[in-house]
Length: 517
Image 1 (cartoon, rainbow, N blue to C red):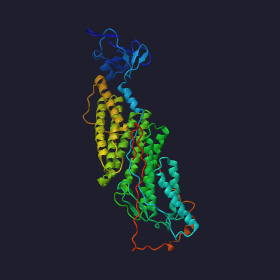
Image 2: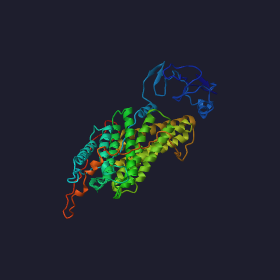
Image 3: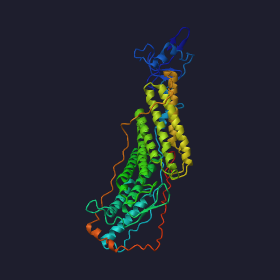
Image 4: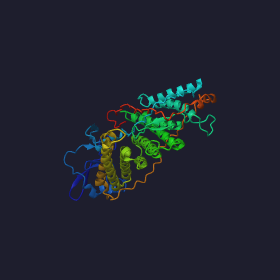
């Protein structure tokens, strides 16, 4: 169709809204401007909207940007960069939009993990004290169920059902060493009969020991929670994770958060010996573990929201809330000794920057959809800034010594995808602003005051199982503490060695971007 001006004749091409249909030569519908596809009609179209888009693109002055007709018309292209010739499609190089959609098809995760706690063997042999068969049976079951639970921590075939059954079996027997059988506030007479020794996830193989069954309950429960986080990481590291497996990752992280929270609020206050500063059972560390699990579970929620193409505003709000979780976890560790916590804090800080970049990126998409292209560009520029910060932190993380995996997160797929997303979205906004909106770019970044109403993660409430039915008044009475051998303080005792846990080497599969320690 030709459009005349004072002394020149220009042409624009109308196309059908259906990219698979033949090119229409009607007088209304989408047209191409400077090789770009616009979905509106010619100036005579009565259905036009009075917007800046049409004023700039379709006024007499705007029409001067249309390419002059020169002989044979060039083939039109649809939004995916494919040529459209007489209703047939010719596959060409995909546009940035197609690349962007491809990158959104799959979201991968990478999680930092501290090592499991190690413990000294416990035989539960109380010669003379366990006077009858019921007591001997309890001790034997405690010994075997504890050994079984420790084995499952490093068994790659273990699943949440196996872990729950093994943990409940041991904890229900151990409860008889802690609680009275009449459910009163009085503690069991066996609470302080056994010494337990456990190492620390941050301070290496330096063990802590307490002669208190509550200390054993907390320490073993801590390891169970760690197992759930490692199981979630291992599952997320699969090359083709299914929807059910993604839900399992999400639930496992929420279960772990619930266990950590329960230990912190309900059981650590019961310890007779105060927790040493910087140790696993200190409130600051447990708070960091709880919040980290919540943040990582929300990563799965964000991936799901992107996959299902939810509104960018919701994704931006979830990413912002997730960044705040990581910042909160980092703050909980801020007063710890850097020699132990530096690597962990690098991870939390880089994830905070990473999801802040996500929030600004999707917030920019929301602004663009509201015809605020200038603000959208500024939001995307802020996303670029935070992504650059995360990139620096990735390098520092790989170089920092301390507990956790030795990897370079910037090379993982989860990190590279965000870089492509930010770049492509920013380029799109800049093109739209140069052709359509012509809006001024603000000097100040938009304030992210986003609140997600859906998808926020809360820990799954956790309770230890009740005391095993094997514990009866007769069984408890068969433990005679008066026959306990007296400690000979003049005779030196051999120090029990605590061997480190040999965790399986679970390297991520091809192109998953996940790493498990």
